[in-house]
Image (cartoon, rainbow, N blue to C red; front, side):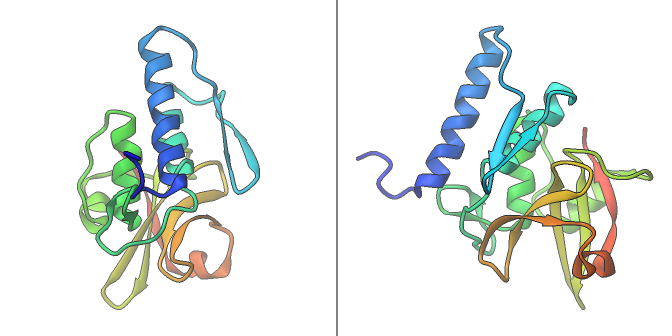
Length: 168
């Protein structure tokens, strides 16, 4: 089988992005909902680019964490996930989290869906996630070894929060 080396979740994510791209290219209106971890996210109020970034990030929930990973079929790290999600919307961003933060336009208000949120998780370790709504973000978790949803209101993330930025 052609995709025998790919995880089922990565294949589903790639398939969802392909369908989204085809619907958009054909002039159809793609669904503005996405699901992850049994939750349904209504993206109807977002512009097309923001919705694409969020849908791409959510499509990778469950994908294995791999340090330096930038290919969903092999695994992703945090900056690989954010780069992948933006590429799905036709937006090129730098590869590593520190460069992503440096190149992003700072967000002075609360981060919106599709914006990046940045954290300092160690003396010289930085982390990035993609906002999906006003509270939650998708990130490649080193501790849980997979892409997952997290909440900005959790103490761990609040204490390490550096700010938000956007390429959208």
